[in-house]
Amino acid sequence: MRPDPATVDEEIRRLEEMAVDEAGVDVTQIDMMLSLTPRERLACLYETAMSLARLIDVKERAGRPKDLAVLPLLRSTLARARDKL
Image (cartoon, rainbow, N blue to C red):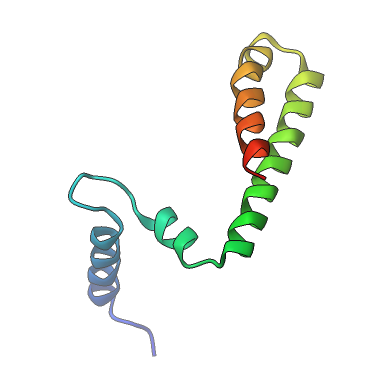
């Protein structure tokens, strides 16, 4: 049996409303991180740092002006992430 489209739409609207607080901040990522154990949060941070390192490598090899322009920001973000590891 297929769900009623109106019911599905209402459930989506309800979930979207719950995802944003009164200041307009999407709290889904905050909630997700708070649901993790400290070890899981550290693993997430480590994976993010590794992804940034790979992205920096790709941008350096591409060598296009727009890729090179973003490198300082990516490098500083990676340094801050590594400081927390």
